[in-house]
Length: 341
Image (cartoon, rainbow, N blue to C red; front, side, top):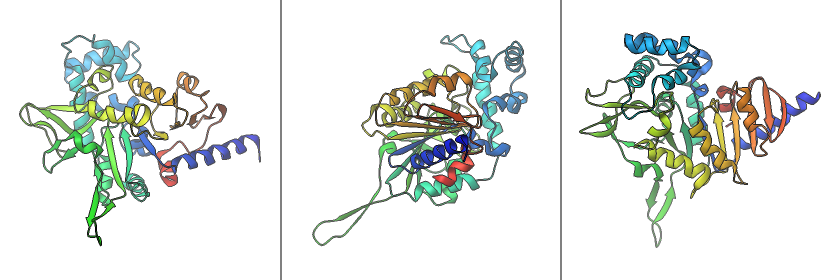
């Protein structure tokens, strides 16, 4: 066995141990919904997917910034928006275009059904999933698998947001000889969509609501999706995002219910407001970060590779708690990770 193959065996063993460990939380990025090109677009593909749906004036402004060298849609929007109180229409035009494009997509749920099913079969009261994605893959997969999934909303046709439900557990009370017996319901999934989702909206009269993922929202409402842009850090201080981010910070860094590990899949570690929470968690001695992503930029790898409680797995390079080695052929992929959960 070569040195490289021995290294990758150790990487595989360590990652598998972490994936099945207790008190784990997951963080899903766009790579977990890409599905080998058969799912939802990655960030660097988003503009080509939605550009024709953007109003002509805003489309020309965004395209101009990209032609001038902007590093993707996020950077282009940043250059257009000066950060003032009164922002232009570009961001919300992008939000609408993303929602419309995503509503037309209906990729296979096979992998996500396997993922939610595996988590639901763990001997835990709840499994925690944080997602940076807008798509409804997890919700649809859980429904198909008859898995209880809670995302902070209650209701049916126009569910309402109830932040108190984010921390709820479920128990069945039965008769005992002297006292009632309480049996905790296991296998619940708690999903926190940190950047909002298709179907979420804020209505002046009805408040924060969620409709069908492929339905229109009221004309007076605003879609609750944070597009790729620097304003998203500020937006996450508002409802419903503030409640969701409070859970993220609480699980990773602040408590009271701290997790032992964060397993990040398909997230390229490019959002500073997300990374700030992760770095606060890494200050703990009993916390491990596992990042599985096809590609990480050189500056990202340099930032994280030397940490003793970080494991990076990509196609080109792996970092095992400070030890750098070759990349892994498929352990970075959501499809492979699901098999090990």
